[in-house]
Length: 477
Image 1 (tube, rainbow, N blue to C red):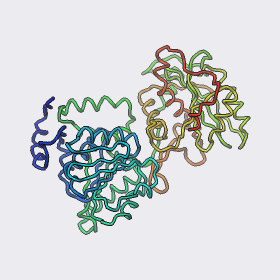
Image 2: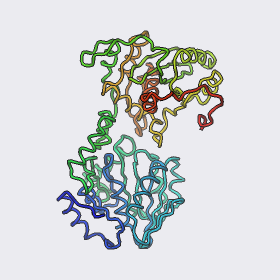
Image 3: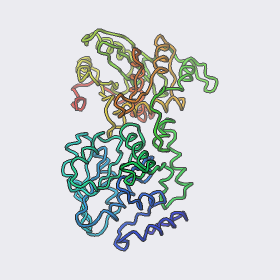
Image 4: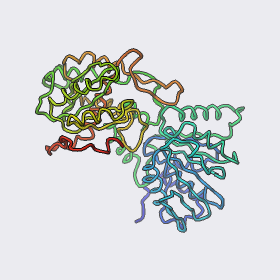
């Protein structure tokens, strides 16, 4: 079916670009670059950085450029993505969408042979083993690093070390999270702005917001409306990074809009009148739970109902190694209430100990690697869970009960901070030295658990929790 190019700017940009396309008559599916994509397509620098928002068209542009400019005898392009699903569901799918005659795609080995003799090798950086990821790159002519901020920090340095030729081109694409991508961006900007820099002529940088990703079949207004629909799912900081494509602040308080959550729990928010919450939940109301287990530290439990009403139920300290005592307290709290779905707990540094102990007490848990890198599981890293909670506070979706734990609960939320890691490669979320953040951790787990089970809790369907009759092996995966 023919595609109508609605935007006049697109038509002009496409006419300017089409002279560079060597096989337009062979295309089974024509990709129409927008003006921002055309800038990168026509850039001939050896090192290119694209700082872009979600849906800004980074992947489709680079697939198109690979097919048009990196397809010649001897051309070898390596593409690195942050996860295997991203490699398979985004990059391979995009190559399929822009497939050309005589092009073959090996889905098992993730190798693409292009019609004019070029070859593309796709690898995912999920194992973060730079030495393994750089295997076989010595003859490469081009490198594409997708979501570079989430790949191994030393991957590019390792790749360069293994190159026979230093003339290979590299494109670094990412949403602008701080860390090694931020450092590389600053280095490139310094090189560009200093005529005497040794790599002054190598680098080019491009900034592209999500709004700049307008496809040719939509007007700018239609595309902007689509992007704006996602505002409700992102915190202000996440919006700044993922849509406006600006680097976040490197330090500061994380939760700045929590006052009304406690006011609503007391029934004292004039803008959102709600009845005062009982100090503790009803034993008949299905609840989700987040548990932060302390090893010579605080053990906390936070519960939420389907309406976002929140209760801190446990905040206790036990000596190191007192597993049975901690287990007894957790079981004592959980068995008072109706469990809607297996409680979520952070197993970082704890392992499977509590999964087994609570299973023996007829309670099953879902383990979360709280400090895990971002993966296909959107709840398996702290930054995503922080965003979920920031959005909830900003949209007034949480009401926190005024009970014996409320004062410390509020203090912990107010003190919770983000800081740049000591080696500068990541943003860390923690309480200041000497303070606690256990209730915050339990709330993040509970809130993400609520998001994951919200549909079932809201439809009146039977709750999916049952007393386990076996250990779920997935728990230990």
